[in-house]
Length: 556
Image (cartoon, rainbow, N blue to C red):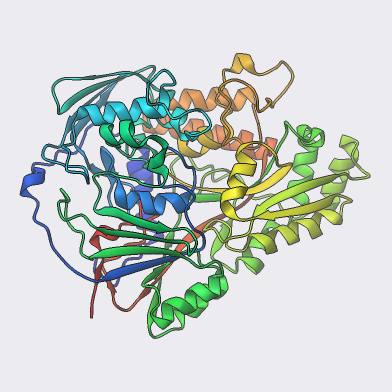
């Protein structure tokens, strides 16, 4: 792939995502080149990355936000990594791995140092795991601090971790779990320093320290600017610039103009208008690839009684013109969704169609459900553009207008992204816009992460398909509070199945249930768009694991 051709065709991405994510990846990549053999490339200049919103934290165990991850992925490494631009697994801080039954064996890379000079060993990963998942650990930062990624990434699956010397580990799982190796490549599995865990605690949210290609320098929160410097002792290839600056520019079009004027080198979060500005500029280039994401509107069944009625949820899905949102507001940078996963993941159910815009059918369903006179609810939305919803306020206004036609009153509550995430993760919303950009390119990362309540089927009250937010172990990413036991059974079975086609068939069943039960209004799957200046070389648009800034060069 040349430096100026970083797009990935839909066919090649489908092959990569479908093939790589489909398998259990039981055989690990062997990297025969030790850290001491890697040659630093050198480089220079300051790379400025402009985005729609500032970070909220720089601790990967303290976030569910992609904005935070853009920065932490430069500071931290994981045992296993994603190859830039694909969903293939490659060596990171581990050089070999194997998943067999309920056991994973891992060989760690030798000669790697943290930014403070301490050598990386198995003790660091064990401390990382315990800090994230073990409330009895002396340095556990608290339930209110660790994110909901802790349980579904590692905590729900790992029984124990034993080390054999400094560079060998055996991870015993509680059950067979097909996506486990991919979970080790997720941002939430970033490896922290045991010493930093002990000495910095929750201060890691403001003062991070990893083994990654860039070292944290400072965070000017007033100006929404984060500065990183090149790690001169990085174990891998790169980095090729002296420093990286992340800056926030809220308006899409302003961000595009900043790129064109030379005030930024790379931008993301592009809506249709901003993409056209970049595409028409001589000073910049628009890059795109198929995304692995979903944009949706979730019904909080634990809060709004009307949403507990399937006919009401279906009625709203018929009433909202998702085709108009995608084609008119998003203007072709996305496609309509019919199910939780996009078509470039294995297990996609091709027999399902998006809900058509049918106000008459919607009204009939509301009548049948006893809500023919309508009702009122709040729709919470973020203000800032996201890849899966580049124009959230306009989309919310369309929802409000569509639902008024069937007698439903919508009050829009728009918030900046970080307060919005806190609002929805604590269940204060009636309904909300949200979306998901895959962490590991596995269907489980959508179905279980977003639609499974994280509790036992026995904890779901009889005759009920939702649970309250105060249920012990509740998965707060399930912002619909949906708890359909048929769906739970299918997704749990898929987790424990290592054969690819069997898993695919199970996810097709899960898609059918989700489509029919409609815990969300399925809105869109968006393309990944980036704008780069003409001085940027070797940047790859990555739907997973990025941005990969360590390989970027700046030309004169």
